[in-house]
Length: 282
View 1: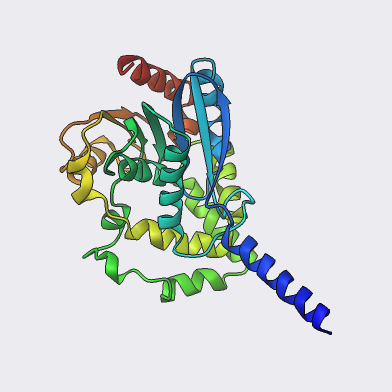
View 2: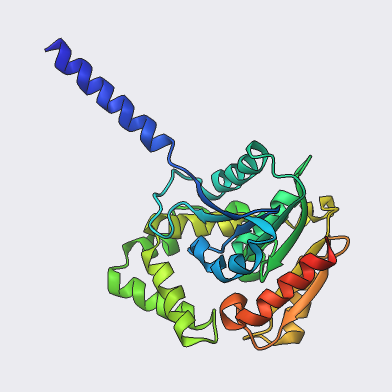
């Protein structure tokens, strides 16, 4: 009986260790040369960078990230985003990624600014693809990060949605994120496939993150590629100037007639822009 009890305890401890060590990020490395870290947006797999990586891998060592809870990756305990951020910073330090370029889309771009603002950062330049330092401030009137909590009516409603309701929501959202119908279907499937709690609570973490006051700590080159659809160039310009007002210097490039997923709407143009940015800053 004691032996059985002992085995039960060992099994329980092993399960607990496995549950607590689930990875916050999953990284695939391709190519050789100076390192580039590629961070996708919310719900998006690292494979979104594949066309760009194919173009870069003969000159750069590409570290392609997929975040926990997305693309069939196991979810982690909450708070989600602080664990993701710390895991990316640890990955950079543990792998001694010197003279590092970080390319981030949407949430990935926000994380890029977080990495660039850190003390003793190893990041040498960042490219932000349609990402803001404080998405919550744009979306929520009288924005106060402290007011955003997991247990809210909106979050509870999303958690309670059945499969068809959630899929309908994802379909509607995807149509605003790309001008390409095939890309819209991809985006929808990424949302639907996401771990539901990570989708709901992770997005709360995303909206809570406000990097605006820390932008003045960034001293490395920053390039921002901004989509003009659906709001138009004038409104987009105003939004970016307002959100990035504390950043001393940056280069703002507009992706004309592209929506949020610029790399899917204008793939050839996007790769050309990245190559040009990298060549100017080598």
